Image 1: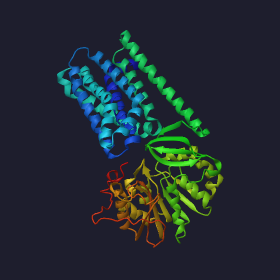
Image 2: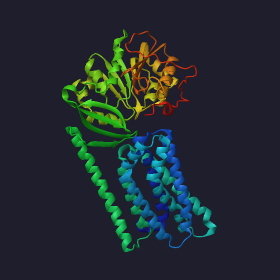
Image 3: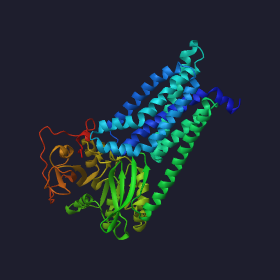
Image 4: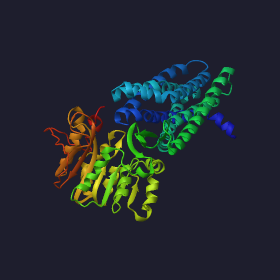
Length: 504
């Protein structure tokens, strides 16, 4: 039995497998498309899953009616063609649509629902048409209806599982979301001949146009991004290079700030790191708040080995290693791709070579989830620094009392824990700061909150360096955070950081 005969015999099983494969990848891509502007919170995932399920159910309902009409194979070709066209449209307009809606809709939940509706409702609905039509085409007699439906559903489920694993583990961490959408268009178009090779002239034109357009746009976008990568490395401004990693959408670009040029790292629309591109300043700190980590050296505690959770562009580790030649640091960064980008764009490789760190072992780069590392850690540190965020949202698992107990257990007897908190000092936007201070006070004897801008406007959202220790230490600029009697304690069971974090 030749390959052609096998494909012809099992064409509908192949089709339903690949369609569900595409469907699950489309759902994963939807969350990634929204994350740079709406975040990756449960609110966003709930919106995406809810809208995709709604569109699929409507598609199944309408597809059932189409399946009962004549010319089912012709209708199936039209559905595949329409799905491809709308996914292609989504790939072209997605960035402008998401950015525009995020800037005009304040609510994360409403914004993510509307954005998912605009970009993904129609293509998901059209894909939902397919399974009822395929079932009707495959159904040979009413006597085997249950067996046929069960087999097709099983194949569809396996296709969905395969799409979930390949999309989540391989495609999304390594390929830009727009590229994945172009690839899905090409895959769906290639399914059309499996349904029926008999095309009318206009169908040939439509299929050819979609295929050529998708391949061309994919090639142009890949080439443009590679060209921008070279330009960013050479110091060009007004251009950016983008990457998708397992944990977020990354954008890197240069800007002139006064007489200096600064290279920025943004992840999911939140600024993660920045560095000067000039050789004489590349290990100097750009962001003012990062300088406040040096407050640990103003105490009488002898700081020699430090743990930092959240590497990003590694700006503070580079400052630490270059400024304190007798001290060492371990850096835990969850995203290995971010570490690779820091080496390429943010001079981490140069730091390693210049200070011979592979030999001296003063800097240890650990790609692991920060909380997982703390749970298993057996090392003891003089200070632990936390600068881990998802965009501008703190990592919930590092803010809870259980995490803080692990942090304390990872510190030497005289110890310091410093964490960057984005918050106002008072008002509605101070909820997370107060919850975090209250939680820290359950574990440490003293908690100091030091605003990194000023106390002239207590409602302004700013970086606040929160220092926790069992020692009594005198720091300048400490703001006394007043807690209410019913202030919450953050726990692994209840940690609503998305609701407590400031609303800009």
